Length: 448
Image (cartoon, rainbow, N blue to C red; front, side, top):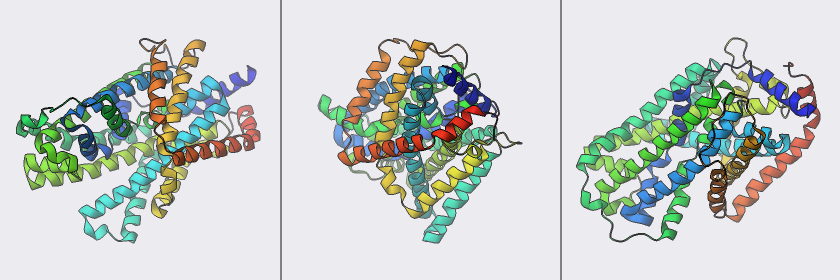
């Protein structure tokens, strides 16, 4: 009990040096920014190939599933105000070992996705600007983007949050224009169902689509910089996921209404739909929008992910210098620099491809841990950020969310399980190797 108290005091001492500048709308924008990535620009054809005009059913099923999961995030986030997001929730609920394993799985999965999207962003820019297509030019573009975003984030969470809000609006504008104009240009006959799809078909489509809803776990990592977390986190989470669900359904319906049966075979479905609604310039607008969307994702993750390295170092799993806070800007500048270098190397060398296999499984396993953590945090009535949010149907929702997650986990392939469990095993080895450093960090929380 004494060690637990010292750990809590240690976390509060480290996080107190950060500035709580993220409000409800800033955090909601961050969640939307990370969640709405490149997937929405290509997934409509995949879902239409399985369900046809009944595709919105899969989105609704995913929205319900994610609704159950994010309700757990909302309560856990309102009870634990420390930097680290899901890692912090699990650590407080079940102790440092389980928390660290969950944190490493989450960090590895997001890092792999971060590197992949950065590389895809460079490819997308090269497609729009052919003079950037050489390997040297693409590498330079990636380095410039990552370095610029790192500097922006070092200079302060407020500026980074405002920039992410702007990026979120910029990526949503082309989609909003397509939805608004396309609603009047589409053919209603393209939306009619010839037959009701089977439950199995809806389930299979949802298995693919669910990953377009992931992102809240990354956006909640900067919990130590959120104002009034007990109020802000649940409001932001529910606003963001509700908005994303409505956006996705609207894009699917409009794309179906404009392209009809051709949607299932479209390689760039949203861009093709815009071409029908506006002509050639509309298709180009959406292609630019997908590039902006990827840039927004990279920007959002640059804000969130380094905070996990900060949290690991704060808790003694990495050298304490990684948890240093800039004396002027009050940001975890060393963690930002280290994360940027790692992602730049992975994106430039292509070695992220092996890591990318673990992303889906690792995030889902962290979701399991977070749902269980919600139950434990409520049982112990943990309160570190004010009066906590309580999930409606508190006795049932976490268990329903677990059923949904387990259903998704059963779809993982053997190589994905091997990769995920390998990362967990390496994290366990690292945990025990870092015990002496952790003991020193907890014993001297004021150290730098």
